Image (cartoon, rainbow, N blue to C red; front, side, top):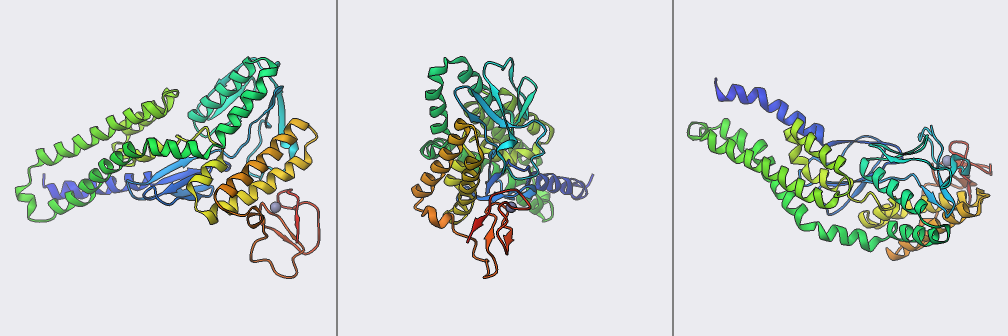
Length: 368
Ligand SMILES: [Zn+2]
């Protein structure tokens, strides 16, 4: 068979499957951070989003849904919460005491505490969260506070995210180089050889052998790095290998499969503080401070109230560490005109008269 005809047939699928892997489905409350090279990141809004076309592209998933630990139990979002609306009401949360808990199980997309399910973005988050709940439940009541504070410190620990990125900087760089080499061979060198006189001299056994070697190298290298990062979650590692087996083109997106869930134990806002530039982080942090303060005001339960107040304080510290004035993060948007009396810091709706709470999302309005 003519090699050009064969290539014509196959190339379309090679390109289509690669492009398919460039898209990412972003669910509400599971934001993703993406970068073409790993230098500058942006945040993807919910929906089907184009992450990045380059094989050097990095992707980090985060989780914006809080699980609030107290020494008596956990506060989680109610079962069946559609997650289509913003979290603006303290009534969205339900309390489960450690004494009531019978079974705490991690699944692919949720943690099940008896019949209550806590949404997760991946088996990595589910496994790590289930382990935290089990560990705190196991402790004596008097020792729980210390452990909870330790977890909170850990999830807001910017230095630890930086150190993680530093530790895996070299392995990820090697993986980027391998994936880029395979990409160039497949989408640049191969068409050049096929559609030029080079085709006559081409040694196909060498070319295909080389491509296969790169492919296998990426598979083995990914397995090696993932075994360190996700040592506690075999399910995730297996999922990656299965995707490589079912769709070999996916190896060119190997970097994403390594980075994707690697920051699962950190708070969403901590990841944002590390990955985003000042301006983007300031906007997100401002919204989250308003949300935390609003929820703290609403809560009757003291422990939950403290959780939200503490969260607002910790986000403030992240802003200061990034050299951003907290007041600037809380400043009203620039496009406000003289008729606006108050606005919603979460959805951005503007009001000509003070209405108390936002009609669209229920959030307490900010007076100007
Ligand atoms: Zn609103």
